[in-house]
Image 1 (cartoon, rainbow, N blue to C red):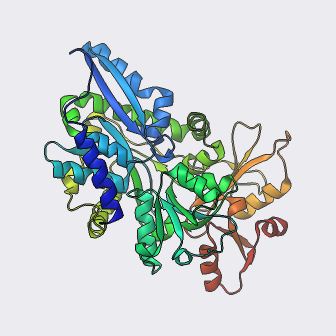
Image 2 (image 1 turned 90 degrees about the vertical axis):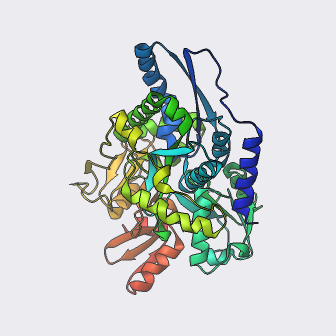
Image 3 (image 1 turned 90 degrees about the horizontal axis):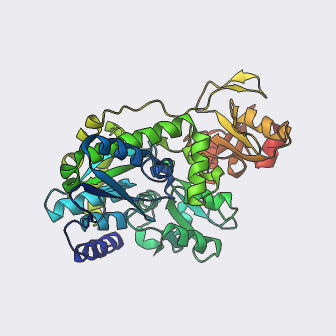
Amino acid sequence: MHSWRRTFGTLAALALAAGCGSARAGDGDTVEVVVGYQSKTINTVTAGTLLRARGYFEQQLAELGGKDGRHYKVVWQDYDSGAPITAQMLADKVDIGSMGDYPLLINGSRSQAAGGPGTRLVSVTGYNLLGALNSVVVPKDSPAHTLADLKGKKVSSSVGSASDGTLVQALARAGVAESDVQKQNQQPAVGASALKAHGVDALAQFVAWPAAVVFAGDGRLLYDGAALGRPTLHGVVVRQKFGGDHPEVVRAFLRAQDAATRDLNAHPLAAAEAVAAATGLPPEVVYLYNGPNGIATFATALDPRLLAALREDVPFLASVGVLKALDVARFTDPSYLAGAGVADGEPARITGTDAVCGRPVADPALAGELWYQGEESTRPAADPTCLLKAVKAGAAPGGGKLRAAYVPDAATGTRWFADQDWWVRDGDAFKPFTTEDGAKSYLAAHPAARQLTYQQALDAA
C-alpha cells in the first residue's frame, strides 16, 4: 500500500472509531466552535496563530452574541500538520480547520466518501503561485547538489502534506522514483532535529521549517518548490453539518480572518513579531514568509487560478493512491465568503526610497529589505546591488546590527536570506538565487556571467 494511503487510512479509521455525533457541550444558548489550526505553519496564521493572538474571532462572536442572545465559546486546537485535523473533522470533533492544498483535497475526498454533508473549502489563507511554500533542505556539509543526489538517501517528510506532494513530483521530474529514496514519515520538528543530528540526509517540509533550519545554521536550501512551477496554497475547510447549523458562525470566522489578513498586510512587521512570540519561531524567519513581497501572499478569495491548480492535483493524488475521487466543485463553497461581505485588499508590498542608491523602490521583482536591530521598521532596497551596498555600509546609524537582509531570487522571485543565496555577477548586475541549481542554470545560459560567494558579492558591489 502506498505510504500516503496507509497514513490517511489509519487516521480516518481512528477518527471514525472515536465516534460520530457532536462533542459540543453546554445548553441551547451556548454554541461551541472548535478550530483546528497549525501554529507553526505560518502561511495559515490569518486563520490560526495571528487570528487567535489578536482575538478577532472572539470579537466577532461577541458581536453576534449581542444580537442573538447566545453565548459562543471558541476551542483552539493546535496541530503539526493537516492530516490529524482531517481525522478530527471526520469524527465531528473539529468544526473549522486550516491546512495545505493536498491535505485539503484529501479532506474533501474522505468526507465525500463517508457520505453525508461532508466538508467545504470556504477560503484561502496564504499561497504562492509557483509553489515556493514547500522546500527541501540538506545539512550545510551535504554532498548533494541536486534532488537527483538524494537517490538512496534518507529524506524526512510529513507524508500526505503539501510539501510531501511537492517532493514526490519534484523527484519524478528529476528522474527519481519515490521508492528510490528512504522516506522517513516524521512531523516537521522531529525531521528538523533529525537533520541537525545528521539522522537524515534531507528535510522536505512546508513553511516555516526550511527557513528556520537554514536561519539556525543547520542546513542549506537544496530545492526551491518554485522550480516546480505549480501553485500551492493553504485554506480553510468547514464541516458542512456545523456550517449548515451555524452559518453565522462561519461567516463570523471569515470576517475575523479578513481582519487578520488586513492586519498582516498593513502591519507586516508587527504581525511577524506577534506570530514569533506565539510560536517560538525566530521573527526573522516569520517575516521572510509573511512580510511584504514575502513567499506567501495572503488573501481570502477562492482565486480561480488556485482552484484550477486543485483540480489539476486530483489526478496526481489519485495516481499515487491517496484518493479515489473528489468533486472539487462540490467541495468548494464561496457562499460563506459572499455572505460574510468581505473583499480582499492589497497585499503588503515593499515601498519607499532606497537611501543608499537614492531612488524609490519601483520593481517588486527586484526589491529587497534590510532589518536592523533597534529599528521599528525595515529599510527598502531597490534591487540586489543596492542591497549589497547597504549591507556593506555596515550598521545602522544608531549602531544596530543587521538582523536579516531579504532579496528575491532572480529567476523565481522567491524571497530568501541574502547571505544564504548563491550569487552571480553578470556585467554590472548582481543576481541572487536560492539554490545552487538555479545559479548554475543561469550560468549555463549566460557564459559571460560568473559565480560569487556572498562575501565576494559584497566586496564587488
